[in-house]
Length: 298
Ligand code: CP
Image (tube, rainbow, N blue to C red; front, side):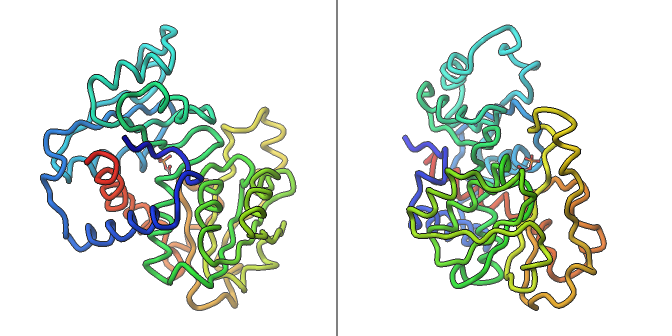
């Protein structure tokens, strides 16, 4: 049984295998009945549009089906059932579980009680490894995953997509720049883990200082729901915005990614510029998650 919990558990070869398979799927080189008769359990205890729907689309395109719940209130967890008991029970109904949960570490815990593979679809401020797979896939569509400069902008403290992404990028030969308001910097333990892998992360507070040197700008939302109170959120809300004016003089090959949803940090006028790849990135969720399901469920 193979769980998919954290990018920390993966080698570069593991990642490349999924990306190569996703590329073949994109070219329609896959068996549409590969997971016929298999059921995917979708346990989403936090809101989601992209992750949930792209997993549903992925299993459907491989001939399987899905069942699930989309809130704590809509499940027996509202009656006090533990996550451990929930996954024990759901393991009897499905062939793999996709779990989104507000608490960091929830997917790891679930994997200890499940008797089917567990895929982490986002655990609080922890990790979001399947998002990272489609982020890397989208970069690879435009440029090789080496000798590039990637800037990660926004909420690097609570942003699970950024935590997973920096770990994955540390497996490749890239330059990493972290751009964040001082209170939302990349956690110290993440920096130390990266340093142990020989990766130094440059730090900036203002994206305009580095944007002209980047090949990839990965923008994230400041997540109101992760802050302890409204005042600490308001201190940093709206502290950056990518606009066409900001992009004057950037590299021709720059791509702008965002895991979405966005909440004002990318001006909609940027959508029409050739740099904007975030909607393509969201579309890539389907072939990449198909590749992942084939890896985990077959
Ligand atoms: N990128 C992402 O995880 O989007 P959703 O929250 O809509 O799933």
